[in-house]
Image 1 (cartoon, rainbow, N blue to C red):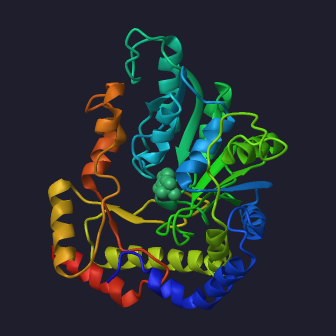
Image 2 (spheres, protein in one colour):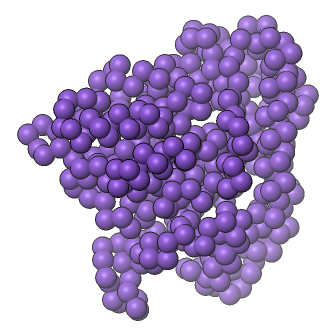
Amino acid sequence: MKFIDLEAQQARVRDLMEKGIQQVLDHQQFIMGPEIGRLEETLARYVGSPHAVGCGSGTDALLLALMAFDVGPGDAVLTTPFTFIATAEVIALLGATPVFVDIEPETFNLDPEALAETLQALQSGKPGPVPSAGDRRPPVPKGVIAIDLFGIPADYERITAVAEDAGLFVVEDAAQSFGAARRGRRCGSFGAVAATSFFPAKPLGCCGDGGMCFTADADLAGRMQSIRVHGQGKDRYEHLRIGINGRLDTLQAAVLLAKFTIFPDEIERRGAVARNYGRVLRERSIPLRTPVVPEGVTPAWAQYSVLAEDSTHRDRCREALHAAGIPTAVYYPVPLHLQPAFAFLEYRKGQFPVSEDTAERIFSLPMHPYLSEEDQQRIAEVLAAV
Ligand SMILES: *Cc1c(COP(=O)(O)O)cnc(C)c1O
């Protein structure tokens, strides 16, 4: 059994992918070829956002977003410690300070109440759940990055209200949620800028690295287009600002155009797989907490993550599945505030209890659009015997 079955997907669109790749080999516009614009237009329309900016990866997409807001030294950007490192990495990379905020236990997404409390603590200068500033001036809050973890959108109504009150921008990390929706709006349309990833294992993946930013703001879109190509101005050798080489490859855009033709169907299939997991796990009364889907939400199901009773129970479940040839994964075993890379922030164990507890108990079952009901029955049988 596979954790993610890219082979079954490729079999459906292989011809279309080959045709697209061949066209690029023929026209040879490997950098910013016509497929880039076509993909940007197609995905902007799907998401319901006026502007799309293709880029080199999901990490580059987050970087472009923060650079468009001029994030730098002295700024604080708030996010959760329960995410892939890229979310907080780009903050530190720009010399700004990541300030962590704990997650909601149900969705594993940014807790809006904890966000408001952390902002208050930061603004009052009182000691609180904020990193040590040493003798330096405490960082000034500038923005928030909310993550749609495992493909379930964050609570944007409440997060945006808290952020707007404090004059902060919101960036949506939609790396795992392309294809998801919340109250009639697709992921990629929340926040001032949304950043997504086309890493092969994401809901819409290419054959290498790729990413995209979405925004309704023409000025931000223009800044990100410029930053993506070395801060380019009106021509190739005018540079208005410091930028990066963050372009999406034309070949990857061609692959994505082909894969996108079956993407809406794949999102439906993922939904059916998730519903079936709920059913088979419930039928056998397996003591794992299945994902909580908030009202009005259609997840992208990048992962199907369950909570065990404790870390021993998790180990037993994973070992039993492994012995039966069923792969599992743990996203994420160590919250970011306890990672060596962020030791300089001087956070301690115990500061983000929900993230820490979740990291000890969570694991993900195989999830992809082509997972059969028989395979899901087998998974449930193995878990029932634990
Ligand atoms: C995958 C991922 C990223 C980074 O995307 P890359 O394309 O691998 O750079 C950022 N944030 C989250 C939440 C992710 O899952």
